Amino acid sequence: MLLKTFGWSFAITALGLVAALIYGGWEALGVVAILSVLEISLSFDNAVVNAGILKKMSAFWQKIFLTIGVLIAVFGMRLVFPVVIVAVTAKLGPIEAIDLSFNDPDRYKELVTDAHPAIASFGGMFLLMIFLDFIFEDRDIQWLRWIERPLAKLGKVDMLSVCIALIVLMVSSMTFATQAHQHGGHADKAETVLLAGIAGLITYLIVGGFSGYFENKLEEEEEREHEAEEEAKRTGTKVSALVLSGKAAFFMFLYLEVLDASFSFDGVIGAFAITNEIVLMALGLGIGAMYVRSLTVYLVRQGTLDDYVYLEHGAHYAIGALAVILLVTIQYEINEIITGLVGVVLIAWSFWSSVRRNKALEAEGGGGGGDGSTSEVSAGV
Image (cartoon, rainbow, N blue to C red):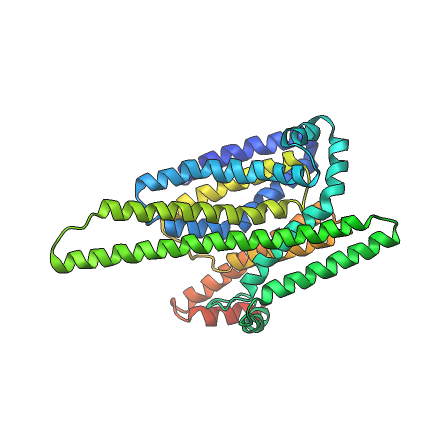
């Protein structure tokens, strides 16, 4: 069962790591491995959400999502999108960007380094919004209660996350402008940082808007289908389940694709905090995306979605850390291995906390609820 579900992922991992080793040696292999772990970790909640929706769909629509969806998510968002970002920010054509990364790596790195402040500003703002919207939301299950409880109360203030993000962007751009002026830099780069950050914020709001739209459509279709089924039971008539299920499944498919795209953003943008090399990024994110797909299938078949409840928290704290690191790298260089390990440590910590919670619940005979287990874990950190 496990080999059947994850077989392709294991094969792609082996090929990807060997390719990284040949391309850039052991350091490149380490970067790809870290990117793969981060992509899986940051997209774990995506797999959980996908599985929860996918199990409601027919076998036909499940197959469509796991085939066409793979092309969009793996090859589109994880492989093409990073090239597009580099091409736009470095003012290159996509083919030229790929050609330079292979044939003139020194010139490519020079262009990407010059464009890095804009990439970091865009990505830092996008990831920061994901983290802030998560941390300001009131949740039944909390991981680090001493942080999450007071922030959840603050989150009741409308548009607080947007205000904080804009303040952070303003401070970052002004600091960058001051540093550039002191070192004889160009003021237009500070303006570019500001505009790129605003673009990141707008991108997040648009993606969130589309996700919300399709989620509402999905809920409407499910409600109509439920009402039709109840009417059929009451009157003893037959309802056209094929039409209703097909329409609902179509909206589910669209909703899942929008979700996939939105969750892909954090992995792709976060990857720029670790490396600017397109080849390593494509290998690492591609491997991670394959595991996310396999994990989605595994969760659907096993029916276990909530075993490790703090992993979602750990993934979002990792996103927050990557956001801060990206904004810092606008002016200062941070070793990519350190950047990657920060996220891995946070994910591992949340996994360990989830295991402790499960053991505590088992010891109590399955009782206690979220608050009790959360208190126990929080007391230990």
